[in-house]
Image (cartoon, rainbow, N blue to C red; front, side, top):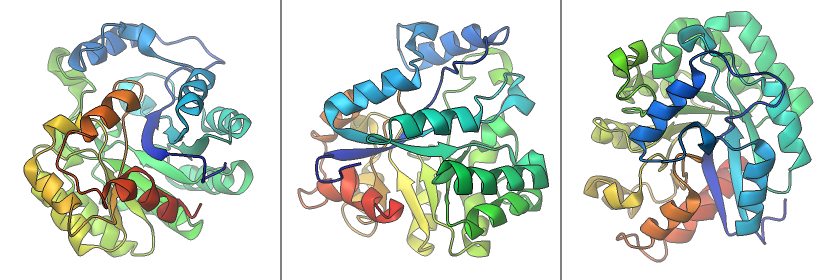
Length: 290
């Protein structure tokens, strides 16, 4: 990856469409509800392959952190295998930075998988979605996995706040928003002070809690994905311009929100000129050690 030629690093993109297995029953209906929430008329057709994602980002000279979400225990939908994602990312290493995802319920087996993915597949971090995976981030049963991630020098990225997943579906697909309160991550940051942690999204309705944790814990960052910047709360913009200017990261939430849309709207909000390059690229370069 030629960092000098890259204009930005998108810290939050999804690998949605596995190449080696058919989708489970009900998956397309799930995606259609998801598309309705984000007002994406493409429905399940909005799911790009990793090769299509790479081409999109390469054309724009934007690097991307890419990951699946292992939520098969709670959703019943088989996960996109981490090894497959990592191999395809390696084929497109000029533009893709591979992350993985492991349900903490996998315990020591998950910890073993995490070490293997870092050592043998070049995975740089792990995505957690507490609401989709049905766990509190500070549940001690997850710590065996965090220990592996921390010891391997990888990054832990947590979804925070309300999620579009299950929104509008009957019972919200039985998903519980309570798991994604960012305050639970404060315990994780205290117990693993040398493990970089990224809290994903403006954390509605807990924005101030997220800003508090990121301000208090040196190892905690925020990616600004999942929302168009025109909807960012003013307090998030205020902190991004000041106290947390070195800890904010550009993220789109591809494919439900495109970097084209995110970056266009980002230009229109009150971010200081000297802070914009930090959010778009420089903070991610330092965090990832590129």
